[in-house]
Image (cartoon, rainbow, N blue to C red):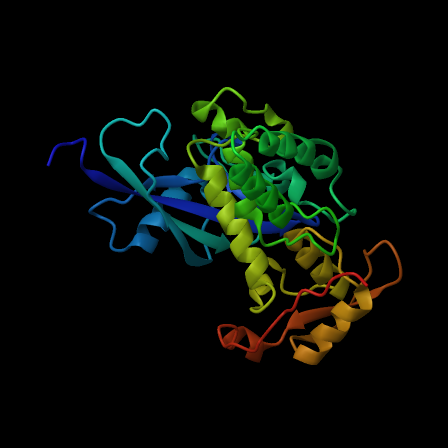
Length: 309
């Protein structure tokens, strides 16, 4: 086997926090990449290696992590030399802390990379005014009718234009469609049509694709597992909890429905304390019930995502 045929394993982390009603992701290179490093023979396990690289590059300790996906496309590394690089990615949930180090770590809003995914103020104007017209033009440029129909179908399925047809979980499918159409910066190496950063901040290699996979996974999980526990402080108001879920989902929730669901699931309990720095009426502080924290991996312990009425 030649060096060109060899494969190396890279560990990549999507580390998420929610701070100030914004979903944040831990990056390196001033926002241009995700924390990443090579799996070394001295690492006891994949998770040990990942934690070592993240803490070395960002000085931020990791809490909850789970394996996300394995990326092994032949052309995933820009200007890569030598053999194939297989990336095993992980999703981590934490609370934002200070990041430092020579790799220029920074916490960034994930909507900086996917601005079309934020529907908290209603349907995205970027989708309506920029993305859909350019995707439809791309579909119309296909050389045969079957391809035109297929492209049009995929556009309708992934970029629904109303709150009823928008599926917040299709983050990866939307990004990959934009990539195929040559409308995101990373597509520049595949053709001359790529847009500048109007359609999101560029990341090295396929790191934005990995990030899209992490966002999609988390948006799906908050509907059936209470993973948002990992992102909240020890005590919080119900409005803070709702805003955290909305930040992740990219859409507003109906307040009364959300609180009814929280109450039905028995996820939280009152602390007996009051938050006075809410900018309005004093609000009760809550915490997650200890039994729920111990049983969070059990199906049926849920934090459903209810949409606005």
